Amino acid sequence: MAAKRTAILISGRGSNMAALIRASREDGYPAEIAGVISDRPDVEGLDLAARAGVPTRVVEKTKGVSREAHDVAIGAALAELGAELVCLAGYMRLLTPGFVAQWTGRMLNIHPSLLPLFKGLHPHRQAISAGVRIHGATVHFVTAETDSGPIVAQAAVPVLPTDSEGALASKVLEAEHRLYPFALKLVASGRAVLDGERVTFSNVAAAGSLFSPEAAASEADIESLARMTP
Ligand code: GAR
Image (cartoon, rainbow, N blue to C red; front, side, top):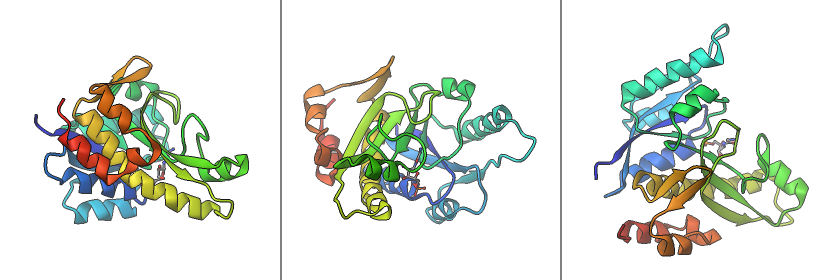
């Protein structure tokens, strides 16, 4: 099966983007990164992508341009890149329902919390103030509502009583860098498919063993997934 052409939308640092680019270069990975689109110029992620030899586009939202018109421009850039899948990776702009509808079942987002907990801004601060002992990250199909949508995969990290917001963010980010390539692999290979309000998984027995907190995020399981037969 040909690798799925995947575009990544960013707004900043691009560390999840870099993790996806790295993974896409592994033998047999089912997605290739067709390009990176940023809504902001001069962000670190654009430099990282360019240095990795990945085509980049900037589609800036300037004053006077409606959100709809901006999303149309993003759609045009995606078409130009021949994108079949889209990964939002720290893309900090709300997408319009019309745009989201065009990419139903083909657009993923990563959010640094165990959704449906702690949507929106400052999820680590929210987790600390809620006093949870387990926190983490979620990759989900994008729906019109922010940080919602059927869940593809999650990774969990412990919250220590001594963790600052920054320390917790770093631990979660490290888990994100394993989780996102894992989730994209499931979707690009057709093993995780959006089915109405839920995600259905093929090879359920194997997928079940991959969803314990550490397993979902471990390199060993990414490897074992690669060896799974459909
Ligand atoms: C990541 O932690 C990602 O989960 C989060 O932004 C950060 C981007 O970092 N996304 C959201 O909060 C979406 N609601 P990165 O640019 O280094 O990947």
